[in-house]
Image: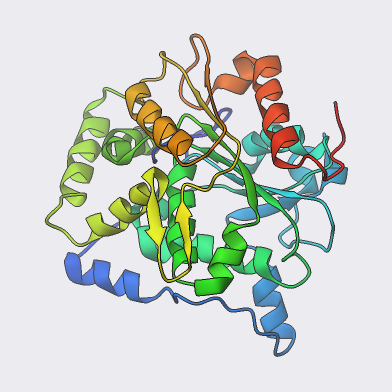
Length: 329
């Protein structure tokens, strides 16, 4: 599940990425450790464990309505559940803060990731690597007991799949982390074959232009089955469709209440692809709700249908945290 659009209210930041071939790809893949870094051996280690990656921010449940100004780079101690929001490509903190408010005003803290093109273009060094750092923060002793909910937008599905792959390499610690995930919301998800169109659209900011089509063609070649990078994308997609992580002793999809949000007016998502995944999740024991929004574009459901969107979120929260004491609205 991949792709995305730039955030509303401003232009997408330019990104320049270059690759020198499969050898460069392999070097990126080798930089990411496959084991967690939980040991506490001094102030430097503590800072590394508790400080989120630079593209991620923390919003306290007490900061509802305060917007971007309330963001923090670290996760403070608390007892509330945490919603992990994985944004679309090019989104900003200001745009995600509107979604974070839906959780904060219900007593749920939020960790949100502003996904960049690099997270998708470098699936191991930046994609899985970033999710590994977020997992380290959430698995540190002050937070290791707190239940989680995942809310992914477009490319956020890819980031979540990368997280599951990372957890699958962590043995019992990975399985313990996965067991804390109690619910999921997927806004405009896109599967593996949608990466070239969706990512090129996110980078350019529009579709149908010569530049967008040129980037899409280049991405088609970049994701070729003949290149080793394809394996990383496939592993993330497989994790969303269903994978058994034998080393860790758990399987995906996780049997948690979930909602999939989409629209026929969205030119990036493919509804039949989403419905295939929904059927697989139901077969795995998930309580899955499909919600169609009328006339809305990619990851643009909340501004057009705010009440309907919030009702979906509220329903998943109640199912995911029935005894957590989340504030009803």
